[in-house]
Image (cartoon, rainbow, N blue to C red; front, side, top):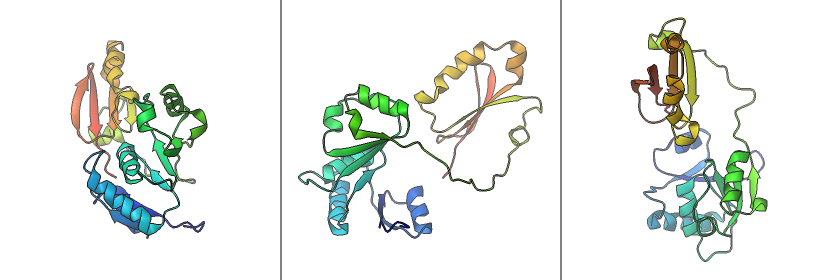
Length: 214
């Protein structure tokens, strides 16, 4: 908006994105999206694109990508931009990522390389790394040992983000099993992300899973 662009944000009702958009004073449209091929959602998006006279449609995840593609069937414009964040080689790339997508935004070179391996032309992909506010807001340190009742001499290994395969979570048990008994006794694993919370043990190491609520 500072550069004179007028955004319209379409997202599922009660989503964190819509709440943040409302706080920022951005125009938003709550739209239920039940599945990748939600035809009702696609019709709503198509209508909003026409009424809003959008210059660019930007899909930020796989579901919105699919719905946006359906909503643009039969239209040469506006350009469709899709952001991809996972480093998996896409399947059926020529069908799902056809020429209707003008540009792909990959959040890392690993994501870009996986897309190229899947058959997407390199010139259609640009890398825009995920960033943080600069300078960051004031941070309040947290003492995880005190909060979780862990010993003061415990060594904490942390993983932040979605608890998906590419984070290497499935390798933690094998890594823990290779630790010397004394090191395993002191080690703790802190997983920040996902939808579940609780204490478990993995590979003989105490682990705490904490859901991040946006």
